[in-house]
Length: 414
Image 1 (cartoon, rainbow, N blue to C red):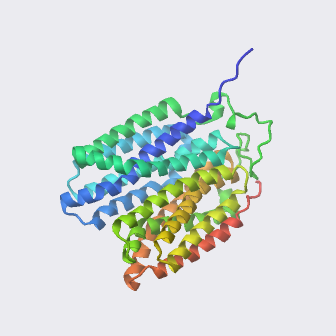
Image 2 (cartoon, rainbow, N blue to C red):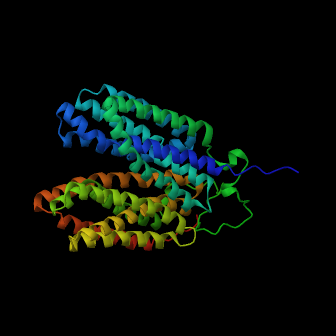
Image 3 (spheres, one colour):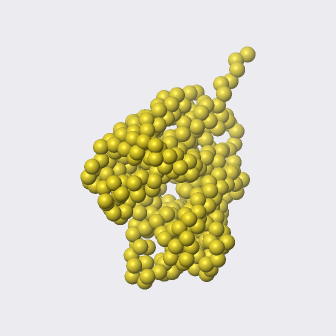
């Protein structure tokens, strides 16, 4: 009797999670550790150096639609390997930085190639291999990026102390190279059909109890086109709540610590709120992914935005230390859950073959909104000498996103 092959999807998923953890941690989450060291060596201002990260994030997300087309043409596995090996080369070149434009150019390059082999490609792997458990595995992929945010900063701090910031970039480049080779060559495979399997390892004759108004199996008619997504109200409702979450992320990542110091808390306490938010972001990612197996994703997204709205109300109405940590918990849960919500919505609402394109259509708006939020809130603060008006406007945007998420019903079948 022939023994059935074990389901390979979990191995492919582990490869996507490894890439997300390693590259995100080395590229984005370590930047804050390098920033003061580089400023001190070259006597550059923090505004000058932090602009490199802003440019890199925009380069990461703005060409997403192009990346999605290339992922569909060549496969996510190819883009993950090529994009992240190029990113490792860019990190190694950081060793030679002498001028501020060197830093800008390299971070734009690393951001662009990381985007090519990063978020869209890794979540495409998860989407291809899982249907019934899609929300759970999307939560696992996005949570791996959050774990990178917890693990990398102390490790990079120790590296810089031991071998300097230039040598630390070489170590990070080596870690990325080894991890991508392991994940891309030995673990990741593009689709279950390539290995004679089906999503979730479940025969297609078994009904999958998920929201899928448009078929998301390989039998989807090839006539479906990305233009159909632009005709669906759900696409714009998803885009609206994604932008609301991006505004919250951009605002708090840039200004949360400064706000807490402005209202009288010491720098360590202010920094601790960021750690609390990061931990609860992991809870939000995994919690959304788990609950979405049983509960409508649009209801969960609405609750996640409500969590963010509660956190903004806390900021506007109290300065109690305990409540500040409650704020961080609510904001972390909301942002973590909504970061998982975006790929889950797209995977459940659109054909599996078009996941990358729809993500590429929406992700640039998220990136630009997150980048602009930090600058806009800073400008409002400079004009009013406080954050109250900025937080009030953010609360209105989050409430609007909540309404959009609640009414983001599945699109009509083609």
